[in-house]
Length: 433
Length: 84
Image 1 (tube, one colour):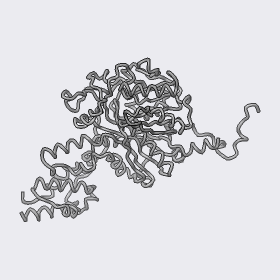
Image 2 (cartoon, rainbow over the protein chains, first blue to last red):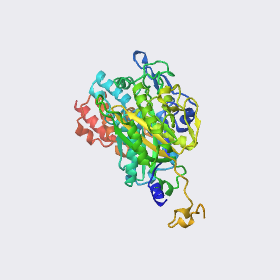
Image 3 (cartoon, chains in turn cyan, yellow):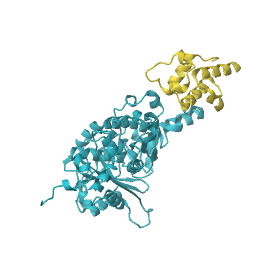
Image 4 (tube, rainbow over the protein chains, first blue to last red):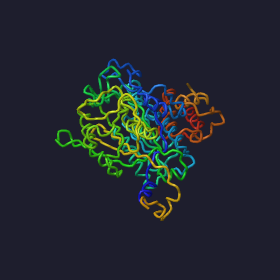
């Protein structure tokens, strides 16, 4: 009992959630749309996609960066960073923390990134080709590299502790949360973590085409159908989620009103090279994350699947889930069917969905897809499902062989003080006493 | 163009980096350092880049490093335009 309480005090918990997604530009708007099963996928509107093989994407709409950051920062950043400005503001407000009132070296920013500031980069490269090097803006040097978002958030909020950026495509969002847990364990007080990506400029889209996994289906409600017999690839999306993480003890000490849940377990694996004949390692990542959380598969109440939408990858994931939990042994959902795959923003958004699922005791649905019965999955489709939820497994895969898994767990409400003091065993009533 | 005025510079600064938050740059800011006004070294680089294009100047990196206030920029540009 004491050991459990000790572990809980050092637990890394999430106390703030901020979201910018194709289905909503703030946390509650996105969550309501998610529960309503409202898809944010549509024909690309930012440019004319008729000359491209991919026509459908999950675009963030109705978002004005000037609502979330001063003009000076807007003009020197890409959309990926502007989404992070908004989501960070929301997450910090949600957690009710003001970094300006805390020692800057005890605060960190650790985000994932995959797209880079590709729209900003495209604009500057066009100036380079059309007008020459003198026309390229100075901010090109900082706006489009992977660490841009972490750097801007660190400067803006005065968070100068162990900052970093993780780049492992769609798995990176979970890797960033795990790195946050590491620095919290070493004494950092609070971490702004998660990730946002924005890759929906012409150049950004062309960069993605080379992986051969994007859906070329032009109908938005038929383009991304993970686990379906008709799966034909995935739809790219933009946005993501930013989470405020701190130790449970620190959260309690400052009287944090809401603790969404604990990052109880994590593991990452890397797949063998293609053609090696050795099996993929997603299942191993899930097993190791459960072991790290000290949880049995039977304790998991819902799985947020990676849901790639590529038949072979769907089959691998379904096999991993069925092997761990048994045929139709656990509810599975892929809410990213409504947003597309957000790359570095995707897994943090799934974690945000998992945390709000824990909060509201409801599993958000997957939309448009109807699973192949051969996958033996209990996929929650079309409508949310009320359920008693305490433990959630989130899976993510990144192009190139990255697999990551996290286990999120509800945090019990604090025990009465008498139970926390030493020598409480005499107070525990005996069952047959 | 043979000289640059405060208003010219202000227009360039605004075009480069957006308006300053909540306040207008005035002539009383001329000698205030860019850092204090809220412009970092990249912003100054961006301003210098615009000046080079609009005034046909070649500004060496060392000169940009010396540009620590709006007045320093105006002085540099006017000195060098006069020399052309």
